[in-house]
Image 1 (cartoon, rainbow, N blue to C red):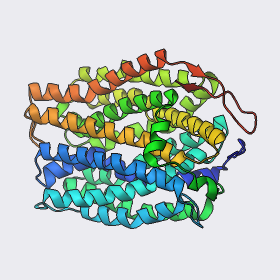
Image 2: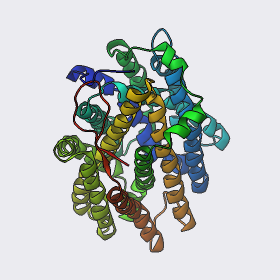
Image 3: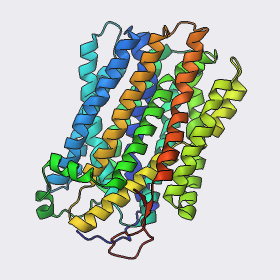
Image 4: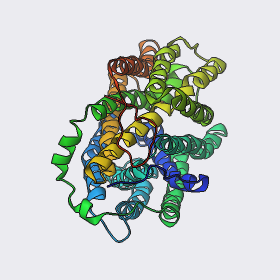
Amino acid sequence: MSRSGAERLNMVQLAIFSSPVLVFQALELPWRVFLPVFFSETLGLQLAAVAALMMWIRLFDMVVDPVVGWASDRFATPIGLRRPWMVASVPLILLGTWQTFFAAPGIGLWTLALWCLAMHLGYTLLLVPHGGWGLEVSGDYHERTRIMGAKVWFAAAGMPFVLLLPTILEYFGRDGRAGQVAAMGWMLILITPLSVALVLRYIPEPPVDRDAARRTAHPLRQFRTMLRDRTLLTILMLYALLGLADAASAGTFIFFVEQGLALGRGASGLMLIQALVALVSIPVWAAVSRRFGKRRALAGVFAWHAALSPVALLLPAGEMVPLVLFLIVRNFSWGADYMLLRALVADVSGRDAEVSGERKSGSYYAMFNVTLKLAAALGVGAALSVLAWKGFVPGSPATGAVVTAIRWVYALPPCLAGLLGLVILMRATPETAVPAATPVAPREAIS
């Protein structure tokens, strides 16, 4: 399948196409940061049980994502490859959100787990086809980075959108943790159908080659073939490192602020710093990528993680200003890693499409999404399990060894991920040949 490399979305189309990222943020942010605390403090579930639930839901995603990715490549319909799955996602997300974000104390662990599974199945039906669609929108080298940068920028913009009402409730001491989670649940219920409707109405999907879709290999054979690509394997290793580190830090951020630094309930407002900084930093890292290449820019991001994350261990307890300054500087790299890695996946997918004549972008997106979710499951599960092992009880004052454990669990994973990522990038070599229908900049991948 040959496609022009000059496709370019205008700014309005780019905003509309990126709007489902608000749904992803409205679900992913509570899942990583607020729901572990809500499940343990408000619903009264044991922290070890919460850790197991978070991990097993991610493992469920690991099984479902590649199936949905392959199916969204394989089954052509009159309305396209990606659209039917996105439509099917909406009722599952709405029902799962209603039963999960508004759960009351006394709910059984298995009942809660089933509703979480329904919500995440809907999440996958939206996330993977939309992600595959994003990989194939353009065949141009720099346009791919622009599209991925827009999606990450919307993720950053979506964070204040998601956190604003919970932050106001927290500031005025209204409704507690349950009120915060409920507010985020209402946002998710409102924006999911709206964003899907906008994309389906205003964004044209690339033409479907039904014969090529029918030739799509059996999923196991296809994924085995994809995993022979050294470039993709390197990207997946870097994704795994990021997933482990981000999940561990995000899943313990509230504990780090409230108990580790003894600052009380102010974590929601502090998370806005990350988003506001990213609105400025993502265009900067995109410019660095255009000037020096994706691989060198990515190395800079990993170096940033490694150098600045350990500073969290030195922050004084009870002082807000040093923490705010740390979050501003530390989060200047937030999102740039995902932007660059996803642009590299788009390069690999585009090369494959030119060679094979088949659209496999759903499978490519599912492949790195599975890696990210598996790593996230292990990251948050390990982090919460370590805190439970050290005797930490959510909602209770933490002292001595428990405070130290909270700080280390928050700070160490991103530091180690940064160092290991740099080692991987230093051992990798750039590839420069890219099959393209029109002249584009050399494809810089990592292999």
